[in-house]
Image 1 (tube, rainbow, N blue to C red):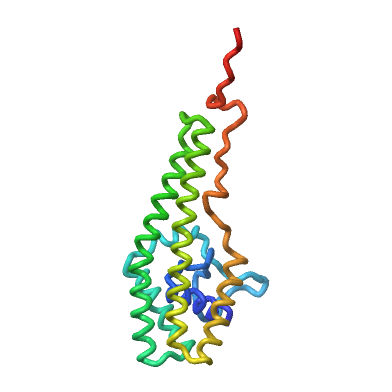
Image 2 (cartoon, rainbow, N blue to C red):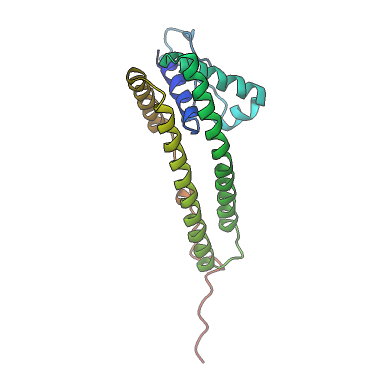
Length: 207
């Protein structure tokens, strides 16, 4: 039951143009996992999440996402008309989200490049990083606003009962996200060099 709720919660992020919130997923979704009596923890994939994604072909990713969307639609009890409208909202949201995510990736790569530049003076490096973080913050604000807009547009096609179900699915997804997600953003990057870094140039001695 918990795995089914998780799958639906992940599907909910598709509607709002979000990114999957699971940090680690069971190897098998649905159905009991056969294990020895003494085994208390459910079996999970041993591959890192990044490696799991790399092992999937584009066709497999598409099939997985379509399955989640189908389960999500079924859980909410969407009509054929609602499903068609939701797909339209989802497609439009993805088209708007794609350039924003590409801009964010470029900005993150720029920040990493500055941090990795050992030939740059620390004060100059910090100033560049501060500027890039400000630009990244604006992009993140645009992403959040787009998700809010998609969310509002999607909920507008739901009945009151469906809205209640959707709210529960979202809450389950947030709970799993908080339990398993470790934030990774420029603020968490340690870019300060050692005290004896050559970029800390001493002041010239007075004659």
